[in-house]
Length: 593
Image (cartoon, rainbow, N blue to C red; front, side):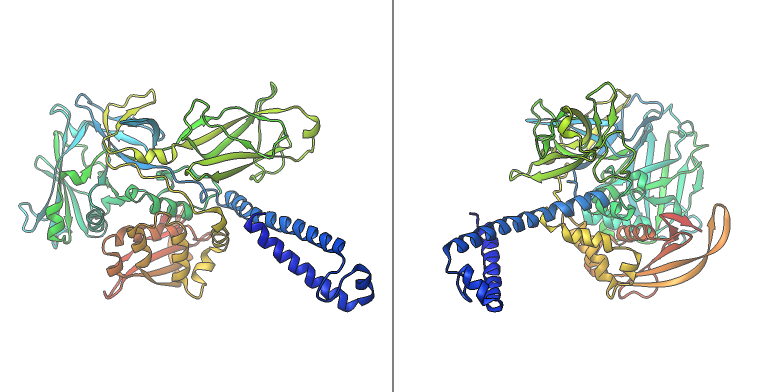
């Protein structure tokens, strides 16, 4: 008998004997005929019977307790399917256009890449956003401290620093006016604190942006620089439609921080008349620390970058459902790549007969209306070697499986390479696996991250309750809204990195105010009720990264805006008077003027 079962047995035996003693005191005559006394059981047959009943009850209680994590897992997979999935390896890849490129090339999101290294076979990654390649390279980048050798433009009279970025086409015969380039993304690379300090300057300290070519200077305005990574179209991982947008944002912010170290420069039509092969972007900044300005160079800015993630879609080995097993193992690749791990099941198809139909999950969006009474449920278990095993459990709602033949199912799944992908290095070779034109040299800008394993299933009762309880009123109506917010952020802090911990610790106060303000909906102006949220940060706890954390909270709170309502975030800094930043009013992450 195992130690766990023994403890259950002792509890049940003590309970039965206590009940037997109570019975003998209430009914002494009947108890005497059974050989039961107040403190003992004289009849050995009755004693053995009681021991047997205690053992059966103990096994039943143990099975009920063991099945509790399965219940919470099933509910989490149904209501918040993103939470339990292991988070695959992530990296950032640069596409450097080849010298013979003379026109723009579109590289679609989801392009598959093969990445291999010494003694490591090729693994499949895929791009997470669309990239438009232009025959442009970043010639130089530097920060100049005032006084400048150029005249300050309107709006930048108080600027004390200027970030100057020179762009050049790959051939002098290629002119910027012929490229139809309206925006460029700059990936900020470097030591984390330096990148976050630079991000703070670019998103909150810019006074004016100019495009300079020949003798022309075009003003773009400070709003031409925007954050990247917070929109649903820019997500790294695939999600179910059931997943709440705010929780998806938290998953990516704490798991893939480098994905947000990007700014987009909106050039609009500033290059329409740039009949030259060289232009200069001048970003006038209110101020910048000397040590940061001296450390910045061309190596800190990169064009044509995209996040990539270790995911691929494949068809598993056919499953034979004979209804003789409680669960069926999912074989992702019978060819020997045992490191493949299931990320999600996209679709299951029954191909037993000529009529092919889809088999819905047991807990799905639509319970009725299927062509079959069969349903499936995904069960996953971690092995001691950190490999995730996946099984299917099958339910028969029509109760016809006993008299029917075996079924053959095909599973369309999204998979990763698990922990092995984290062993790749920055020097790994990258090739394109798709039959598309990709005229660029591919290079990793960071080593692929390790797969993130979500906490053990026995701890999932609290995440389930937290997700069910967490909403607008639970947060702002709590006795301590700051603690409620931090608890939710900690649920997604799977890596528990020092920077993630600093983000959470920096939140000091959270206040709300109900306001009425004019908004513009479908081109018409009207008044609407909304919530003005004031969040106070402790800059000493955070250091750099105030702007990035502010962007996160602004988009996160916007997902809680009700119908015909809005949220507006105001950032305050402890020890500094006045408002640090006031975000535009948002409803579901859409700006409302």
